[in-house]
Length: 150
Image (cartoon, rainbow, N blue to C red):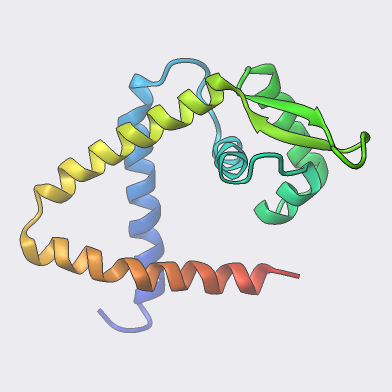
C-alpha cells in the first residue's frame, strides 16, 4: 500500500469494523437503539461523572444546544440524570442512572466478547500486528483531538 493510500484505507477499515460490531450487537440490545452521539455522551458521563453540559459539549466538539438535546433524550429514556450544580444551582451535573450504567456495561462486555472471539480466530502474526498498532492509533487519535481543540 502506498503512503498516499493509507489514510483512506485506515479510515475505511476502522469505520467498517465499528459499523460491523454495532450491527452484530444491535439484536441483543434491550431498550431503544441509541445513536452514536448519545452513546458518546453516555461514555463521557461514565468517565467523568458530574460533568456539565458545556464541558461535555466542548469535550465532544458539539454545540451546547446539541448536547442539551441529547441530555433531554437520554434523561427521558432513563439512562441519564441531571442534578443541580454544587456551586451554581443554574448549572447541571450529568450522571448515569443505574439503567444507564447497566446498559453501557452490557454493551462493553458484549462488544469485548465479540471482538475477543474474532481476534482469537486470527493468526498469531495478525494478533501481534493489531496489538502493535494500538499505540500508534492512540497517538493518531490524540493528534486529531489536539488539532480540534480551540
